[in-house]
Image (cartoon, rainbow, N blue to C red; front, side, top):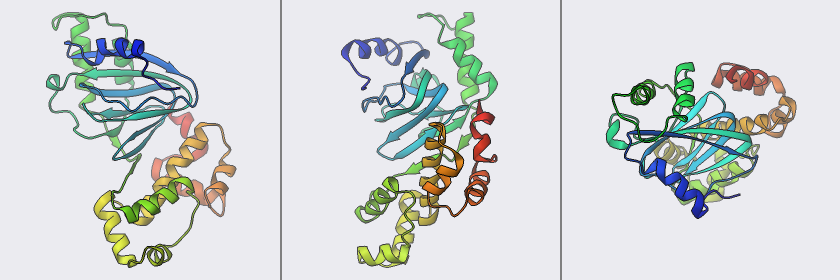
Length: 263
């Protein structure tokens, strides 16, 4: 179900093209709904009080579970797929209103204060004045966004066509255990070249990229209610305990508690 009917686009324009420094709105989606590729002239904090979002740009993918949000700078094409029923709450921030905010897409933590400010902001009527209660609330929202903590929930996309063959295969089949040596043979390059290109283009080693792809797939499947045992075996792990150890090392909690911890 695409997002951008002309009526809905007109509705969004009053927020992401507003003269106000900050605007906010609420939008609910059903499971599996996907927005069209689009961008905004204002920066955007995209947060879901319910459900999980898979946010994509040409540079990569980000999984956004509960209690996380994604910071989307202005003018970056992106699209969002909903995992489960998603109740999105988003703030648009005029670029000149906060020029020192993040300049790249990042998954960030959402503090209790930031969450409440965002929920309050969606009820602010436009226009408002800077010295009003609503104006102070919006400024406090921006100040709180400045202190957000980024998290490693990104899967960067390489541009080298040889690496793209690898990453496409691993994205479709994250359980694939093909070694870097075998990939090198298939692509008629050396394993050293694969390692060098992966780090140059994604900031990750081949092994780290494959593990991150598995982690993001695991989060998506867990969010849809799949059991930990099924997720672990489906991703090629020999046992649920091996999967849980890797998961806890990355996120600080075992997979069985992840969404409870973030709710």
